[in-house]
Length: 251
Image (cartoon, rainbow, N blue to C red; front, side, top):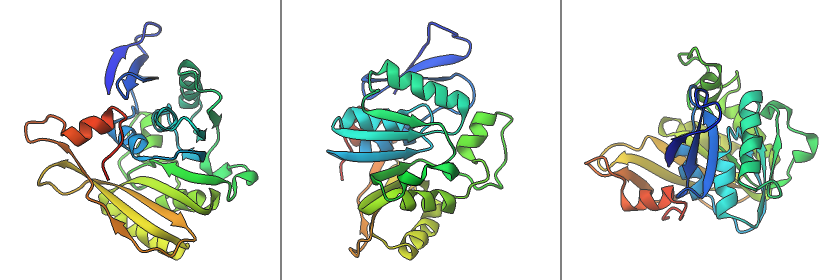
């Protein structure tokens, strides 16, 4: 992931690149900015075809990353924040992906009725902190990190609702919320639960997990080896480097 200043409105925005500068993303210089979590999630999702839904799409790091890696897929990106949503639309156009990625500028609470059981794969990188978390003075950062009053369960409910039978749901979550997510999935006929832990450095506890499940599946859970992001000297591991380049994540 690399960053350079945008030529227009340099005081407000930066122009960033992911996947070896294959995907360009304009975003606010201050406030919430996408990070490695979004890039890892986009690199994790492999879907040769089908209709995907990205809940809380932000400026499009996950949606556009998935689109670049999975050119046969169609993606609907949902983003509530008007200013961030405008950047999302701008980024879709700038990357010439308007035929592959469409947008809905609404809260996940108000998804259209025809979204029910429609999508082959629903993806989300929801706010990591509970609603009781310490709030920033920046509105965009609050929406991204804490949310707008919706709980993680609310996000999961909408994802399962929008997912078709035998389709998949994938969330990037904090590792300490794994039990909460698994309990929900087990209670809502989501099987084939797959856990992919993310370790910041070898020897440290995992701090993030990508958790996926399949609707109306009775297959048991799978714990994958996961990925370590950094060597002890702070450099990226070889697997993390491949993921950041959009070359996929070793399973």
